[in-house]
Image: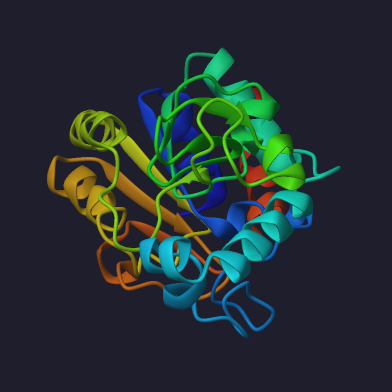
Length: 240
């Protein structure tokens, strides 16, 4: 199947996208499992977990302040903008994302379902009062009750939010085309959604720099730069 064939399927509408860390590398953010990935020199179970928040507070706060600072000045890349354009054109029904950087929303996408939360927000672990992440860079206690602040992301040891998961499952089961962008598909439940889509009759396309565990069931697999590939597909989508 050629890129123009994929573009034809997308142009028919009813597309759902699953995005992972590889979607944001062109914006300057590291992925998680690549050679320069975020987890290469850190054990996420020690730093991004409930246990770290409660028992290793200093390193936990330092780690998440670093991650929040990494978002400073980061902008959506051309790939994010293309997806937002497809949504405005009525071709893309929704984005399921494993990312916590908020770049899909910054690009203009509205139907974004965040499986792992968002680093743009923090909240009090005690009274649950919400704040912008800038506060976490200044202090790690809640101005309202003095409780510990925490990032608005899902930590290791926590359940994923039911709302986004339910919507993701509904979208996947009713999509005509399902496009995976920059996900290794190693993490559950995100790796279940392409399978749900495929088993429900959708065409499954995977664009990722490296092989994934679900390449065998995809209608087309492209191991190439995500943004460049989306740009090529978009030329055919918009010209058609």
